[in-house]
Length: 317
Ligand code: SF4
Image (cartoon, rainbow, N blue to C red; front, side, top):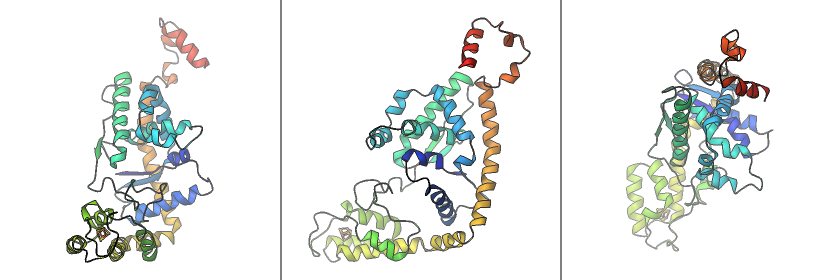
């Protein structure tokens, strides 16, 4: 498996560049904390492998603007800007490059990214049709059971930009501070009102983090008005904090050894570049960007009918 920390993507959202290095490092620590084994998987920082941005540029040649404008995320994100940066529009092309550079055949994504993955497949199809049949695979989406987790507001997907998250590596008191703000069944006003766990996002989150006995107990006591929402949320906060305890310990281990993390990322980037360079060399060849291969051949003297003029124009451009 290949895990890429996408700092080239991060800059499209703006933000303070002085914070980006620390955020990049923190994400590497988080990956290691949740169990990524660098002996089995590749992990690296996107900007350490410049072939990502090069392939994205080359994919511009086969990607219709209309396809990009149709992306739901583009429509959502572009509303946040007075003048929309081109990076917001082209973001899915870079995603396609991230995936296809390694000829990945499957990508774990959330439901909200399914559309971008479909565009990746479309870009692969178009590029293959234009330049080299069956060169790029069409990757499949791997959607997990927890494909779309609603945030604490019970309304939007859990997302840091919306501010409705619980941090995986948060300490137990921070987890409680976040979970206590969670929205519950709106019809439940008083502690003894019967509740509807099936419409309550806190209950859905219990389903991901609590054991089956706790889930069953809450379901019954909520319907009977025997448990208050605050107590129910306390149980959820405990379950979440317990679930992530081993990860918090591993994160502390790696935070105290930054050189180890740096070596893992450097080694990952070296290995990733070997694969990436092989792909990009072939892509450049198929797209006619290896001009040295033509030096001294008849077509390089301008004898190829119809092609010489356009080639010269392109070279001058
Ligand atoms: Fe939701 Fe729990 Fe309150 Fe029931 S008791 S409404 S499941 S938070």
